[in-house]
Image (cartoon, rainbow, N blue to C red; front, side, top):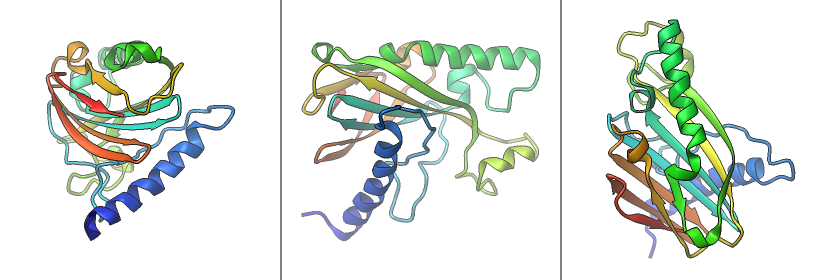
Length: 207
């Protein structure tokens, strides 16, 4: 039986998922960046504190569609965590973002029989970790860059030829971004709501 705390978490998650489904499943499929936090606690904390080598992955499965959100330390995507301003840094940042966007089908691996294809991505290349002391919102990036832990937030959408419920999802994020060794994954698919930790791309999650 689900305890009171689990029930509170579930209600919080469902509210966020309703927002996601309304934004991602209209006829236009217009992409709007959403900072969902399926691993949030009952107090509404956005996500776990910034941790090098660790990325959060939130997965929503609905019918033949998959929405996958990735929150990763910026240094794991393009090699540094401050806001890119110099031409050299901007070039490195853009290369990392392009690598992320162009390899969506290779980073996240639904079952081959589902014939899933990436149909869009929305990427925020620099988001300040709001869990840090004194950093309650992205507006803090206007302050001193010293000590700031930037993140990359991305949302990917996949369309499949078959319903995804009951299938498995594998990962190859570490293969393309070597410093990301651990994925903290949260899944909402039908009645399923569960979390898993994937290390070095080994293992899978149920959808």
